[in-house]
Structure formats: C-alpha cells, structure tokens
Amino acid sequence: MKVLLCISLLLPTLFIAQNLNRVDKHGRKTGHWINYADSAKTIKLFEGRFRKDKPKGTAYFYTNSGVLDRIEKNRFRKLRTTFYYPNGMVRMSGNARLENLPDRIHYYYYGKWKAYNDSGRLVKYYYYTKGELTKTVYLDKASRINDSLITALNDIDKDFTAHNTRLTDSINTNLKNPEKYQAFKQELAFKDSLSFAKIDRILDTYGYPGKAIAGDATAIPFYILGFAPTALKEKHMSKLLMAATRDDISMKSLAFFIDKLRLAKGEKQLYGTQYYRKKDEYICYPVEDEAHLKERRASMGLENN
Image (cartoon, rainbow, N blue to C red):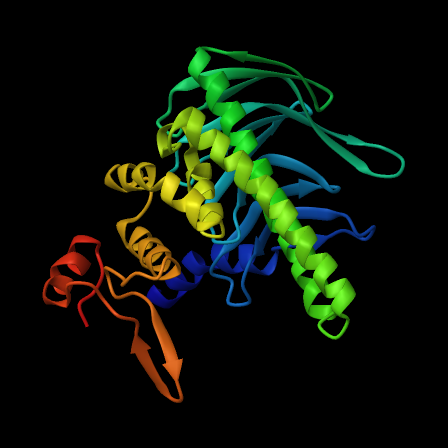
C-alpha cells in the first residue's frame, strides 16, 4: 500500500517532466516550457506555458546567471510586464503586446510605463505608442539629470571600447607595414583623446559621479582614466580618493591605479601592487617606506603576503 502511495505521489512530477518543451504536429510550442543556460539544467533562462506558439499565463525570464529579469502575465492579448533589478526590486512595469505579422512576430511596449530606482521609489513615467517612446515624464529634476549623465557615460564607454577593439586589431595586423601601423596608432591616440576629454568635462562638471546618480555607470570614468595621460590622472586624483571613501570605487582598485601612476612618474609605488618578470621570477618594483607597507596595504583591503 505504501509503495502504491509513493508511486501515486511521484506521478505528477514524472508527468510534468515527460511533457516539458513539447511542440504540436505543426511545430508550434505547446504546454509547459523551461529553457536553461547550462547543460546541467541548473540555471533557468525561461519558464512558461504556450498554446499554438502563443504565451499563456505567467512567464518568467532570467539572465544568463539565473537572476530574475522580468515576469510577463498574459491576459486578454495583453502582456502585463515587470522588469526587476538584480536585487529583486521592480525596475519597470507596464503593458506589452505580441503581434503575428506575415514575416515576423512583433513584440512592443505600449501605453504608460512606470520606472523605479533600485530602492523602489517611482522616479518617472514612459509613454509608448507601438513600441516607440513618445514621452518621458520625470517626477523630479534630479532624475532627468541622472538619466542624461548615465546615457553620456554609457555612450563614452561604448565608443571607447569599439574604437579600441577595432584599431588595436588593425595595429596588430599591420606590424610589418610601418606606414599603416603608424597611421592606426595615430588614429587610436586621437580617438582616445576625445574620450578622455569627455570624461574630463564630466568630472569637472559633476565631480566623480557616484552610484547614487550614475548607478552601474559609476565605474566608467575610473576605467577610462586608467588609460589616460598622467596629467589627467593627477588632475582628478582627489576626486578618485573621495569616491573610494564613498565606496563608489574599491580601495583595492584605487591602490593599483595609484601605484601604476607613481611608476609612470618615475616614483616608488606605495602599495606594492606592481611587479615585473625576470626569467621565472616576479620582482616587485621599488616601494616607498617599506617599513609601513603592511599597514598601507591593509588600509586598502590588500592581502599582506
């Protein structure tokens, strides 16, 4: 009797497992579907239900690391959609729709969407017409400033990465062609200088943009300054130190930055982060005031090996 009871309890699970990710005779998705990011099927990318390729009920979408990204609730041809921050707070919510066109499926937002900061405070409204953003209404002026700053930082980062990737590849391809090699190096230096100038203006205008106003984009100025000329790094060092005290930049990363800068100026490093290789041995560049090196490293969150 106990055996029969156990089998009966397992049957629903077995039934569900056997009926996942089905298609009908026309090749259309039907029933319960789960997609995974890994072969071990431990990280979900999607979970939901379909009928004739159309979503039904509630669907869950995840990032490649398995963190919930959005939930869509399908009701009367309307997708009530909610996006989430990695911390689980609501990022955006509103309505979307799927249209079956002759050549494709058209997914778009429409109507009024609410946007929140990562603390859960409503900061603005978006208005969409068939997927086109037609109006943004900010609930305070700071939100407008923050959005403009974040957009500017992301654009600088995108351009800096794109031109460095393209031109570095071109330089490496033309190592045996001096004329092209120099031309690509000059172009790289010029385009880099434009990115450095934009970051310089932002830091002059806003100071170092912290997480409170720049969100994830707060790391961009520090990253790009890492490639900048010595004079520009020195100009904004006080801002970087202040940002590190606010935890907008990690102390450990700043220690590496400072040591590289000091070596570039022909000075001894402070935190012992920089080494060079001689045969099979790594040798630390000269360090100032070695007697207090451990204390300085500890203050920056560095291990004392």
